[in-house]
Image 1 (spheres, rainbow, N blue to C red):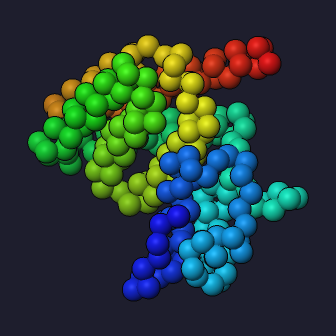
Image 2 (tube, rainbow, N blue to C red):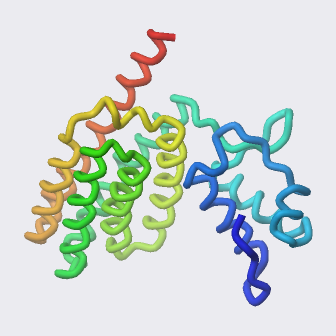
Length: 222
């Protein structure tokens, strides 16, 4: 784990370190989290660790079970709820962002798409998750509504958590989702908020439907 800096609030640093390790896949879904072990590894008392774990539990990245705190395994029913929330909220964020994006943002969005294409071709799915996330996060981050940004950041984290555990999801996909990203980018570059909202909703719905099909196929094989 990363080192703690004494000049910053310990529980926030601990939270950031643990969240990063969960979303990067270093800490796996279903893995049990030991307060004492984390405290030892980070060289802090158990109090900031306890507070950090409480924050992660509020984010639903960590859940309490009979055997203690574990990294959320994210069942299909959990993902259905996450996608339903994203379908309701993220398209509107794209609409709001249309008038706030500058030329540099448009260039960065195009860069995320190009890098994602390259990662898809090379089947480098860890990088693909990173670039796809960057594309969505940049748009949401420019919507100008801090509450909406906070809600969508937590939803995004749960999506990434499941994708890290199921990277083969991308191996079953063609590049249609990248074409959809390009269509969304075009509408944003033209500052057409309504088109961006429509296209983003269609994009997330398509993503959701493919995700459900991949799980149904997996269950049938099992």
